[in-house]
Image 1 (cartoon, rainbow, N blue to C red):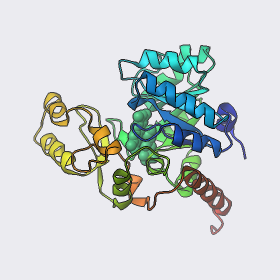
Image 2 (image 1 turned 90 degrees about the vertical axis):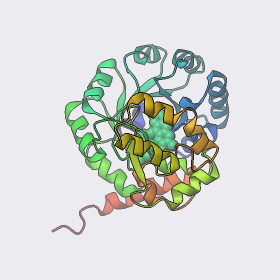
Image 3 (image 1 turned 180 degrees about the vertical axis):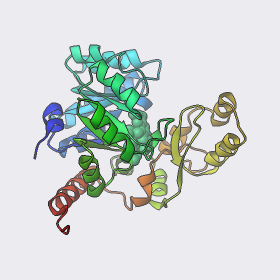
Image 4 (image 1 turned 60 degrees about the vertical axis):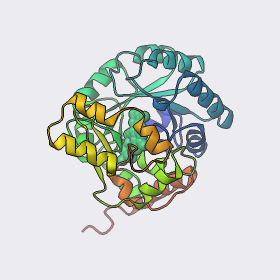
Length: 315
Ligand SMILES: Cc1cc2nc3c(=O)[nH]c(=O)nc-3n(C[C@H](O)[C@H](O)[C@H](O)COP(=O)(O)O)c2cc1C
């Protein structure tokens, strides 16, 4: 089964494994691409040498297309773009910045480009910048998010109505039913983050993955809006930040409280009290650590089964 997403990006299954700091290195990305989805390296937690290493390893493991996720907020972004172009990475997913800065350079070098947005306003800017597809990420999603708090259910139909480029849905999608809902809203593919963060091949710490598996409804929250709105698991660090936020702390106070390296501490080093444990609302429905291939096939087969049965019992 093929659609515009599969044709544009050269994959068999219209599921993107999201780029995620401290989770998505070559092991995860190549496993997803080999299984037919679009695997993504998360460059946000990589310096230039590390990114080059992960691209090489990914290319050695799979001949199928994979992508690099490039958050546009780091000082080394230009050098990352040069490495991506030199290594002939087929797809780039930019996020957290202005899509017009690098889209045309990447496209001239032969890359396909997608950009992640959390609002219609930025989606229109991304389309104007010439991206091949826009990824709409709702308020449910793990990690950095939009200030508007627009849910996936509200965002995707608007993007489909107002844009002409293909739309990918992200945020709260971890099974075939939610993928089917996204497709029902007009998306041609989905980007899945939280569920792949717990995959066997994810480089996240075992303790982080187990904390996600244990999470219940209501265990995540979106906070630190004055710095970068971020959805994370509730722990000691979260509580200190939330208390400060409730007392009206300004950007500088929150930044000092947060300090540096918190996502590495939590996700990669497994410090469940003091680390920033980025994960989405859908954590409550993730029940086991599985291989990337099993996760991809489970979502896809579940999607196909529910699609076949859709509206069967309607009269
Ligand atoms: C642990 C974690 C790290 C993330 N890091 C990034 C990142 O580096 N760049 C980015 O664009 N999005 C990042 N995200 C967001 C994902 O790319 C994705 O859009 C989101 O997880 C989708 O929602 P879901 O978590 O409900 O599946 C991260 C998400 C998680 C859970």
